[in-house]
Length: 284
Ligand code: C2E
Ligand code: CA
Ligand code: CA
Ligand code: CA
Image 1 (spheres, rainbow, N blue to C red):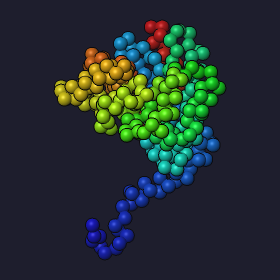
Image 2 (spheres, rainbow, N blue to C red; image 1 turned 45 degrees about the vertical axis):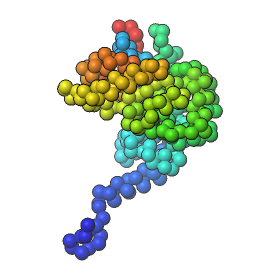
Image 3 (cartoon, helix red, strand yellow; image 1 turned 120 degrees about the horizontal axis):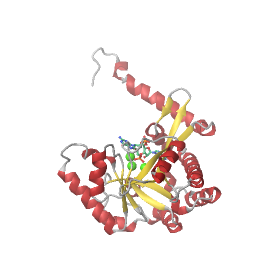
Image 4 (tube, rainbow, N blue to C red; image 1 turned 135 degrees about the horizontal axis):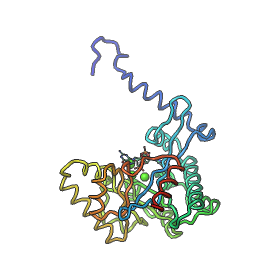
């Protein structure tokens, strides 16, 4: 578009400029933020749809920025991925979350240890230290590998070659679960699932959202039903995210989904909160 006043500087979008400056500022602040301990983790419970019990939690990273306050991962994970900081940041998240899971297990007065889900970025998948770092972190914390689930997005594994799958296979052989995150958004070949060392499908929030409308879109319902039956025939568990109402939870339970996560149960929160939720649930 041509600027009306003939001043070429009017072509610049001031909001885009502000975004670029913030982006630049955040990018340069990322490495020191890790050293200064400005990142922290919130935990959101994963609930069995069958009996409503908390069986684990997903670790979600946040940045307490000295000027901007708490920033969500969507603000800085893409920047960390572009600069490579995601590798040390992701390692820190894994270490912290695994340590926390072990602490919950030690405090738990009831049987049924809490499991921990941690997100992996595609850059971490291609990093040669993934398997050895994970083994070391689990051993140091004293957490069994089968209490850990690593979440990888469907899009990161589309067209994945054997080199990319090898570290995931090794982790799966050790007993670590691999979940396919944001499932249903990546248009992956469903038959391809058999090739992947995956145990869990995490159905994307968009499906749950479309169930919010009443009546829910019948095509979406059919798709979810199809995914659930395919997943179960391949021995995969189905987790649904973004469950915000009891009606959704009931609908998804009837459709055969195994586990759910969402604001209906709890928003992400501090580790003490998750321990309370799990205990209340185990005793009552
Ligand atoms: P995700 O892995 O799909 O995580 C689920 C997101 O949905 C979280 O957003 C969570 O707070 C939000 N959520 C949970 N329940 C509900 C609900 O009922 N309704 C709605 N509307 N939203 C809900 P969050 O914490 O902002 O994280 C965004 C994304 O950032 C995550 O999406 C994940 O892809 C990424 N992320 C978070 N932590 C990490 C990390 O440690 N490493 C990496 N690589 N990525 C991370
Ligand atoms: Ca996730
Ligand atoms: Ca997800
Ligand atoms: Ca997502």
